Length: 460
Image 1 (cartoon, helix red, strand yellow):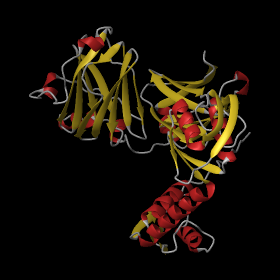
Image 2 (cartoon, rainbow, N blue to C red):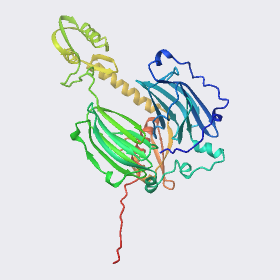
Image 3 (cartoon, one colour):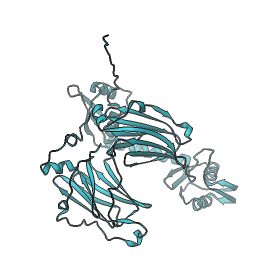
């Protein structure tokens, strides 16, 4: 969650600041159809705070809509009816917590995304034709001798549910069907200062509203199958000091999320299967239809025809030989390719837009050699040692699991040591196995679910 802290921004924050080298001249030919355009981007650091100044051709009536994402730490501003006249889409900054800025023009709007190393409070203020964004304004106020408020001082500290209830709260959660059949989850917040973390977990979409409270009447699971959208259900619950919204879609889908003032919208839309995707043994071939009529023609020539028709790059092994006769009319090209491969005892491997065709035994032998080479690399790869701090489990339990003969997390060269006093596990293994073990520890080392039991005594 981020906090707005009233910081008076003056021109002194940019005193003596030279224009950033990345600022380029405006391109009127590309922006003449827009009402406004971004002409310059400058960054200055003063008193521990980072100031980003955007200069536009026309002054803004108010700061643009913005939203933030906690992981990865990003702050986004949307400029409707505005073009990007900087001449570039990415600018590397590396000052304080600000790593870089992305300025992307899409349609009739431009989005500015500030990429941070960690989430910081921010404030946006319009001064003439300039939009000034202050990151970590609490630090700047402290340098100026102003007392830092308790909310800013505890920005990164976890708060209880009661504290969250006194601050940000989720007021309402609704589900709607869009005009294109997409599912729209609309969340009304008490303040636009919500820190939002969106991630895909398995087949679900998980949205966390950080440092927020959820009223009891909104803590429920909703079945939205009757809306005929990709979303089948959604569940809202209070998890510690955050509100967690779990959205369950089905089939092939993609999502888009945006925030406007106090309203957060998550859209989930259906994705049509790529018609150029290979059938791979399925009966539902999706390729464009073609007709082939050949008599006693070289199989390489037929594969070349399919390559020209599909724009795929087809590579054939030297062992692919022989002729064939075929007559196919209005057949999907992936089905035609499958028929040719079966007729000649061939198999294929697809990587991107490249298809490798060879006899099945040859492909299997090649893949076996590749796997054996990878196994030899694991045997020769240098060992590394890493410590894992266990917070909610006993380190001895994880140690016993890793030492058991049925485990597959460690390689045959791996070893593990436990320190019960510090509840740590020390693992020595190759880098790939350590990375897999790191993910496992993050998944299982979570706080156990707790149950609240209340008792009341009434005296009459």
